[in-house]
Image 1 (tube, rainbow, N blue to C red):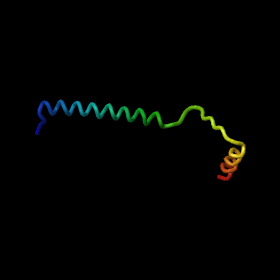
Image 2: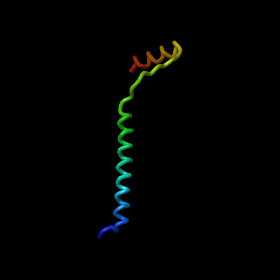
Image 3: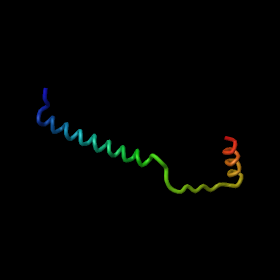
Length: 58
C-alpha cells in the first residue's frame, strides 16, 4: 500500500515539522543543563547565620 502523491507530500511536511520541533527542544534542553551566571543574595545577618548553621549540620 502506498500513500497518494498528496499524502506523501503531507507526510514530508509533517516529518520536517517534527524534526524542527525536536531540534528546538534539544536546544532548550541543552541550555538548561548547567546553570551559569552570578547569583547575588541579600539577607539579614540572622538569616545568614541560620543558613550557615543549617549547611554545617548536613
